[in-house]
Length: 81
Image 1 (cartoon, rainbow, N blue to C red):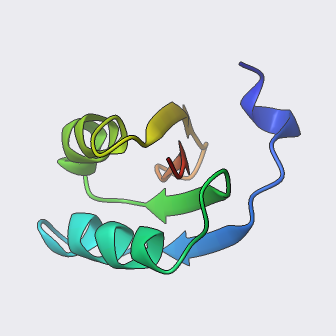
Image 2 (spheres, rainbow, N blue to C red):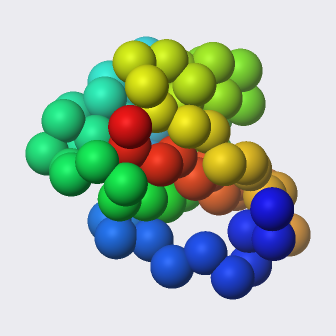
């Protein structure tokens, strides 16, 4: 999937937060979303590269992918199931 063409329904900035906060905030954000909507998460915690993709494919959700930015941050995309 071409992540550059994704239009997210909600944006969550977890930059500067360390584990487990990015994952907890992602869970909370998804609870408030409707099925089929896309959550864009911006993060800087290296541990999130394992946690968010794993969580993104649970509970009927779909992890769409991640994209590393030049500034060291990572963009994640999850489609709510």
